[in-house]
Image (tube, rainbow, N blue to C red; front, side, top):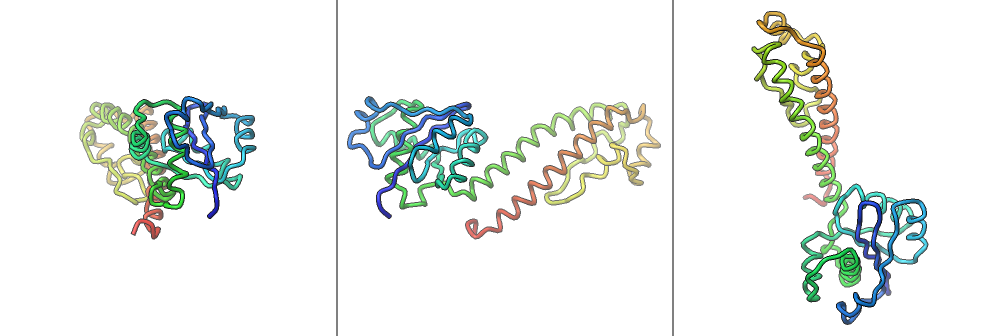
Length: 241
């Protein structure tokens, strides 16, 4: 492959800092003093301006995946290759140039030079498949953080509405499509096993509030199941062998 031009992109919440080079500077410390970074806002004008600059590929860190996703999307749509570099790798790379401080400008420069130096060695980049697996895992973690306090509140309600089942298991097995029967029964589904407990309880009775909590949990369980299915499909790819 001939000479390539790389864009190092440091991602911010509402903008990006960019360094575009075709060769690595001989003195990175001196270069950073002279270099004026390019900045683009996360809007139509910013995307258009970035894509108007000629370069072959872009290098980014997987920081704030939601903020980088929009830039990745438009770059790929425009025929530019996008690669990611791990945080530790780029920090070590900066330090190898005796640069120990950190800024958006420095990160953009380091990403660009790292990409130029190692473009022909893909093992130094995070693969797209592992990036997708990370994204799915973060989605599951997010749903867990939403679910746990709802379950805790539901158990508080059951302590007086139906104390006999307040501490019963409400966990769904991995890749089991149906939410737990108790959860569905609390949401109003007629499940014989749990109806007996509910009808013979010494409690005050299941409230609409509790039914609503159970319905929220069922929606979360369905979302989790779909993510689990995609994770299983992802793990079948040869890159994980």
